[in-house]
Image 1 (spheres, helix red, strand yellow):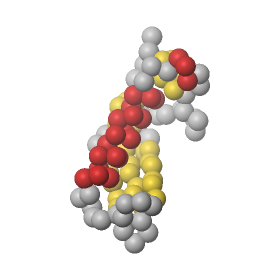
Image 2 (cartoon, one colour):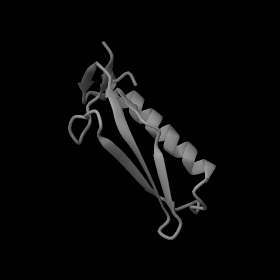
Image 3 (cartoon, rainbow, N blue to C red):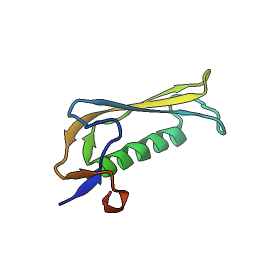
Image 4 (cartoon, rainbow, N blue to C red):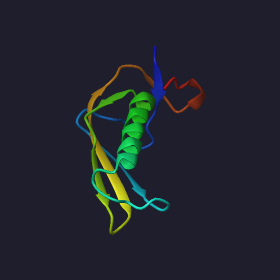
Length: 93
C-alpha cells in the first residue's frame, strides 16, 4: 500500500481549492509570464501531488509586482487511495 503524508490542516477533499504564496525577496517579480516563477509553482504542485497522494488541476499563478508576491492556486481533482501518516520516515512520495 502506498503511504502518503497526512495534511496538517485536515483531510484533503475532492474539489478543494489549495493555495500557496511567496514573497519575492531576492528576485523581483517581473511579469505574468515569468518562467522562473512558473517553474517554481509547477514544481510545488508536483511535490504536493506526490506527498499527499492527490491529483490536481492545472495551477493558476498571480504575480503582484507592486507587493512583490507570487500566489498560486490549484483544485483537487482526485484523492488517491493509500494510507496517510504523520510519520515522515514512512512517506514514499
